[in-house]
Image 1: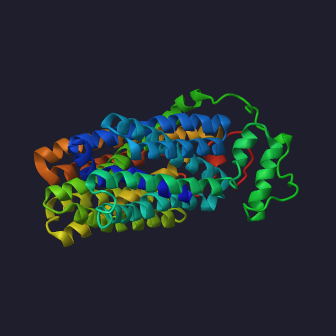
Image 2: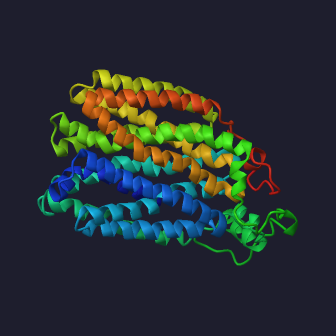
Image 3: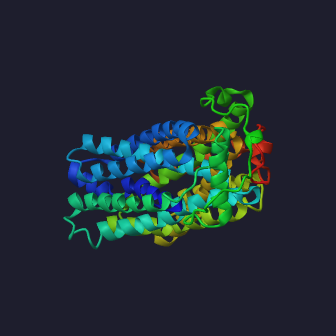
Amino acid sequence: MLAGMFFDALEQDATGAIGEGLKASFGMDTGALALLNTVTTIGGLVGRLTTGYLADRRGRRFALSLNLLLYTLGGILSAVAPNPEILHLSRFIVGVGLGGEFTVGLALLSEMVATRFRGRVAASLNIGSGGVGNFVAFGLFLLVLGPLGDVLGGPSLSWRWLFVLLALPALLVVVFRRYLPESPRFLLAQGRVDEANAALTVLASGSLRRRPAGSTPYLSTKDIPATAGERVPLRELATPASLRRTTAIGLASWMSFGAQVTLLVLMPSILVAQGYSVTSSLAYTMVMNVGSLLGACASAFLAGRAPRKTVVLPAAVLGCAAAVAFALFAHGVALILILGAVFQFFALLLNTTLAAWSPELYPTRVRALGTSVVNGIGNVSGAVMPLLAVALFAAGGIAGVFVMLAAMYVVLGVSAVCAPETHNRSLEDLNPERVPALAA
């Protein structure tokens, strides 16, 4: 799962990094780059909702395999795109593949891991994505578009080789995923007791590579819920309790994900507009993403030790302060790097904690879809907010962008107050249903 998240982060960050190359190849301006990100993000929304539904109906493993196929095909098409129209189509396909990867992975891990470790393990996914992925991404971009740029054909061609490099290693994830068992909770919710016992036996063995000869009867037909075999009950997402939860976490995700994507997409262009070279802007953005890595690690550490609200509320306040500080004082390389890293720290701390929070709020039968809806709301923000930020940047410079980000964090903190606390509570306690406590 971490490997998949890592490659997803590389693809997600690529649009901002290859901006100058796309300008050289297709004459795109900053607004067109933001639109390209919007197309990718809309694809992500489609992917989240579609894959979430398929994961609840066909299984978590099936959905993850489909995501990987679409992601790889879209990446290769991006590398050979002859015009902006094909490039937009390819990035939409990539977005569809990326969209469901994270949310289905969250649902799967949440269902497999014991309660006391659940938040920590779910949050660790973002270490591979927003943490290590964001940091390594800009290091790779700097290498391919900088020192190797001329060897690979200059600004108009090097970005194509970058997309090739991003697509091919993802095929290696197939090797790892063939060992991944299906969620026992999903199998039981479908009435597939024997398969659920087989999956539990594999997990209990401590090794995903070796398949035990038989299976231990952890569950019996008495444990099958009355709703087993029913179609995905979309009405369960429209109950008053589900709507309250979705509204609270969805609004928080809008603010958190929108702020993160805005900064990732626009930061290289913002630095270039301030007079820094393309290679310098990529290097500075990479250094800032040390804060992303530390923020994701901090979230994973705190997820097993502190309530979700205890983490989110102070982080939202401090993230707001970091955005204001960047707008007022980010003059010169040292302050840009320090304040940028501090802002990224809180951005990933918030984004990772909210990601681990969302699958805990829904019952098994709609967990993947509910998580996808919440993250889809954030996905829409990732499409809309960079466009608004471009307008603010044109009107008020970098200060306008970071004032917007500060305001978003204020709203995030307020909305998070309205969500239920899930720390150290089992999924069955949070979402009563006739399923045994597999991870007490």
